[in-house]
Amino acid sequence: MGIRLIKISAVYFLIGVGIGYYMSTVHDYSLTPVHAHINLLGWGTLTLAGIIYHLFPSVGKTKLALGHFWLHNIGLPLMMIGLAFAVHGNDSYLIATIIGANVTVLGVLLFVINILKNLKQPVEAE
Image (tube, rainbow, N blue to C red):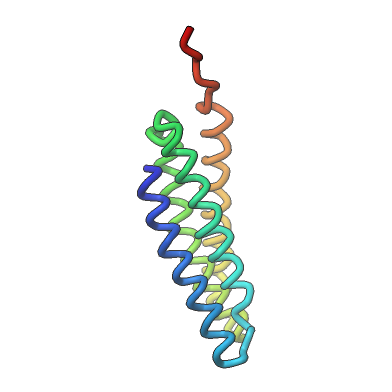
């Protein structure tokens, strides 16, 4: 699970940087919220979650981790697509932003529950 999340986060990083590059090229910064959220919730957050799941494999093998993985990676793109339309004045996709945000938050909630419930201090060898 950890390596998969890190690889997906690299794709989010490319998308986030690509949006930033596009905005600077055309001098239109209206997609700044999309750029920031993809970099933070896609690249940064999923990289850290992937590192945690990799360092603590038992935490990454839970149903909570699987739920986090799917909810985060379904909700975030949905939220970002809706937000991209919304910042350009098309509110007909605002529902996608709302649904995507709620799904992403549920994924993050599962991650937090998983960490609090399953992350344990390693037993030191004597």
